[in-house]
Image (cartoon, rainbow, N blue to C red):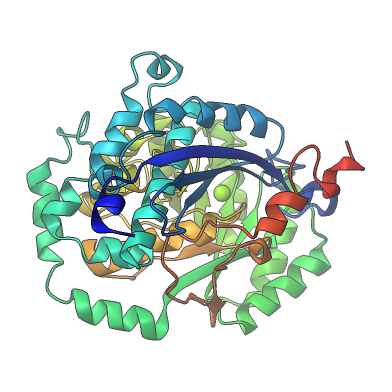
Length: 441
Ligand SMILES: [Mg+2]
């Protein structure tokens, strides 16, 4: 292939697949608000005519029904992508991301929230996957090798400037420039800290909870998480079981998945307080900024965490401005992709609040690890009080699954964002006609 051919390459297709896993059959992933999730992916493939065999893969995560609506939302973005120059997209991912959120008709479905914004996130992430593959780099490293100016150009500062300006962002990134190489070396050597949610699903028996908690500690995890919020007496018993099993030195976070109003959140957590919960995650509605602030004030020193359902950077900004959270939980597939997550990482850095990403689901661990590793190398320069969530199911479907050992995510080395699934998995779990589903629905 000549240089000219490569430079003229175009995006030729945006394929969308509806892929679902029947996880509800085993209560894996069950919590107070999502008792029977079928973990699913509205899966995106960007294809080009560059002739280099590279494709951009990413996904929006859903919990089953509605995955078809998510896939349809992604398909509405195709006219903004198909026919564009591959080089133009990959060389200006900030401009590309901004161009997707400003469609004058589609923005009525948001703006920048819900299924249409998750669709933007999936397409933007697929473009990052493609760009990083072209550069021969895993995304965390691709990002960590950009200059502060190039990183600032990734961010849409619209509606942020009262809390974070491009000048602020530049200063944060320049401050972290010394020591980047050393931190890359440290990541390659010993990875990034993780915590596990595997013991704590609501559908599990106390025996299974204790066994999995014991195994987690033996595996090197220093933090586990329990789902709470269905029944107070059960939660007190489960929390006591977990605390007795792991001892005083292991952090136990709890996660209510938005179950409560503000008053009940405070009461419920006071009943769990004797067992020393480290954070309460999603105590109430993800849109209730002042509610989170009230819960935080009432429960101190128990930390308040949220983010997996936060629609966009503007809501994160307000949570930080209102001193409503102790922990920011970014999600790789909720907001508008890598670009908006860079904005959120910079906001958290500006306010001095640690980021502990939400993961699990399908492919969320694979994608979000890149953002935390980039944060460590080029934004905050620290892993103190920072952990990435880890859940140990469905990784076998990915071409480059996460590697977690000794309670740490090992740094990925394969180029791209990590969301690419095996062709057989895409075929077998295709909904509703793949072989796994054809007998079920
Ligand atoms: Mg959660």
